[in-house]
Image (cartoon, rainbow, N blue to C red; front, side):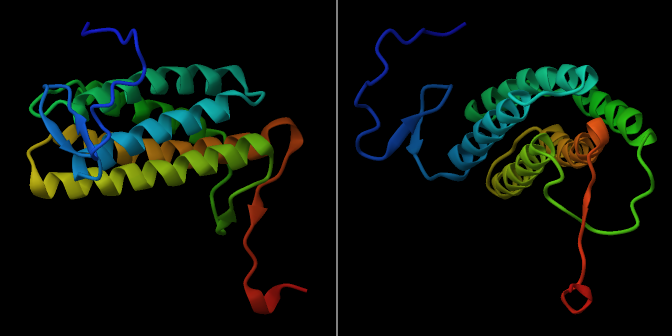
Length: 184
């Protein structure tokens, strides 16, 4: 593993640049930094989901995903480096099928909420979509591992399904969207 930080502040970023994993420096608002920074934010929001009481299978999946997201962040901060294999996407699809199997068919739009854990999971889903958008933008500028985009796409689907699972856990309910003229 690389150098460990013994001192947290280095002053090297005080002029708006940051170091990538390969040692090169880029602007802090570059597409690459936006992509891996949003993956980091996503990992933090999943940590927020994990701080809530969760069914054990959900906790196990999210713990694994946090490690995979750290791999993805590492991949995105090192140009030309690949850490995300197809097997990560396959595992997300397996999880999707397993968790979705117990849910009733979706007939309506649902709102983010239902329970605290479900709302946190919806937040993670929206951050995941943003990470995906930034990563797609990066693919237009630089060569990156195409599996990374598929991974984020599939992960946002899984987070949606997990939010549904969590909204229904322990007798909770999903919040169904009602059109404005049908409310009241």
